[in-house]
Image (cartoon, rainbow, N blue to C red):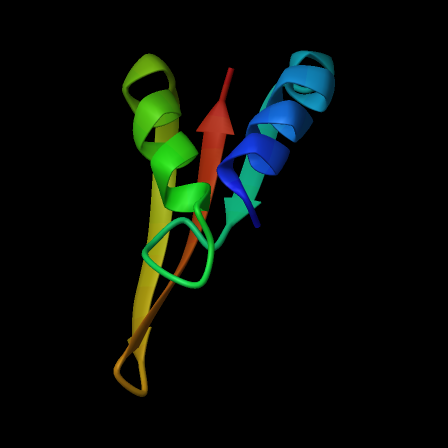
Length: 64
């Protein structure tokens, strides 16, 4: 996921929801982590991060 694509999704669809979930919130292979880092200080949130097989996987949930 590119940063621009994820940010466009957030701007287009985020306003319609009270709860928004993101996947790939940590490290590679996407740039979701960059947007996640920008958004999470602004909202109540929960992160689920798992270190599986030497790779970090993450889900983030924002409560608006």
